[in-house]
Image (cartoon, rainbow over all chains, first blue to last red; front, side):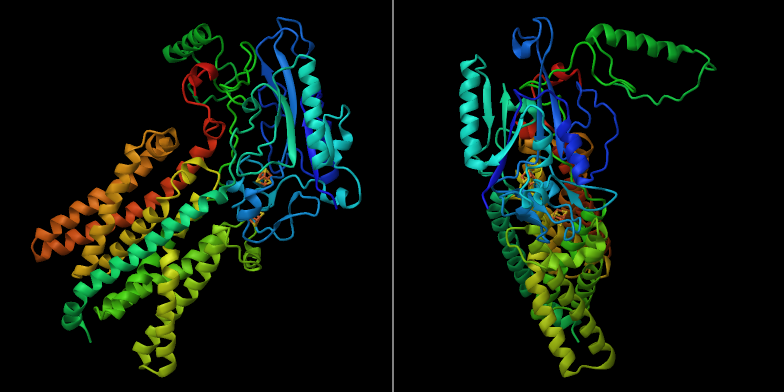
Length: 267
Length: 359
Ligand code: SF4
Ligand code: SF4
């Protein structure tokens, strides 16, 4: 099976939330209510246990020509966020039950029948994606439509997207497409268009890439995400030092004092 | 911004000076900032909230907070003390120390061996599935390594205390001696990592305040656990042991140094350990386990025989309380750190109050 990926192109997104709806309906995910977050037309503010696709509404300062707005209007861009399906996935490495696995399509999948809700993946994801559902107790996130992919279909969100802002396909092909698209956008004057795919960090690239305009940080895309396993060496070294000092110190303390106590109080 | 509680009164309220003052405040805030942020209002409407490289995505947090309840810091506390007690019990036994001390240390370890897994399991989203953790052993997951360590420790510490108890009660026998000795050796081996692995557990995560301290957390937690275990032993009446005194002094000294290290760092990664409620909690835990315990112990060295015991018990209580507060504080700091959208986006603190209109 080939390794697949998402390419989400915010320059095509119209903010319709078809992906959110399609995801919820296909996967039977509970609703989030119809509340506004108060930040533009964003509903939930972030991805979560019941929000596997999340459309971000990014309002910029007025900028003539941006998104076809009148000069005095705030310009707007939308981007549908999703689990990044990291090449080196913090959640997968951290999971103590082996519930989180890499599928034959290269996606990162939480097996709901194995997860025991320890919550360790939640603090190990550098993108704040996976979350424990408090009613259910288990951790949930985008499955990369593992079931649909196995049936030879494309993910529900990609299928429902009316502008093909969400593209799905073989990962290397999509990387090529992304480059071509960037070139085209720049040719058309969008010099600030960039591809978000953190290849040069310990995450090692993602299976969900994003084309955004401007600084990716305004889309809550971290400039330097790190997979937490990089901290292990330092942590276990410190643990070994702590153990050695505890052992040595205790030995020293009791050997220096032991005989005396033993004679006085021993049986 | 003020978050006064508002009750629906509906046309029956009597105006007074404070109600009128509040209306003036709202008006002034509106004039000053062009918007008012309080109950019922989110910062939408003019001026439009903007997502930008300075505000991130409207200042909404990127990372998720730890989903754990109070049981997890309590688990860190109990496990740390139990692990250190097991180590002390085994070594005290090998060194031929006072029998009461050995017995008490074993009971502390055994109590921790029962309480720790109970706390950990109760905090799972699906406690009935605890055994799923035993499907695999993953060296790259501190949670997996920790669960296996916990299991080994619990079995060993419980077996040691039980065999020791049976031997003293019904007279020694060969099988009991074998269990006691093997259990004690195993609880020493498992107790060493068990007393500090929780530092690696939270250190190797995506939470900035934790992973930036990953090199210190295990040592810090080990010292905290040692101080707590020494304190417990002293409260159980082992307040004459010079070995315990020395270990208690060592742990308190290290905690003094740890407190200075945290206070001395200027990087914003350390903010949750220095400011706000989690900062004060960290400080309180550090002061109780460090300077307070140290001064009481030092005083006990010079006090008369009677005073000395009392002072040492107080030092023990202080270290014990400090250890508990320290664990809660670190978990709390993790929450604060996860809510801080600036850290993972690497957006410096300057001007954010301006751009977001306060907090
Ligand atoms: S984005 Fe988070 S949840 Fe998704 S694969 Fe990466 S670490 Fe796991
Ligand atoms: S909550 Fe579930 S999926 Fe996440 S680390 Fe624990 S067992 Fe694995």
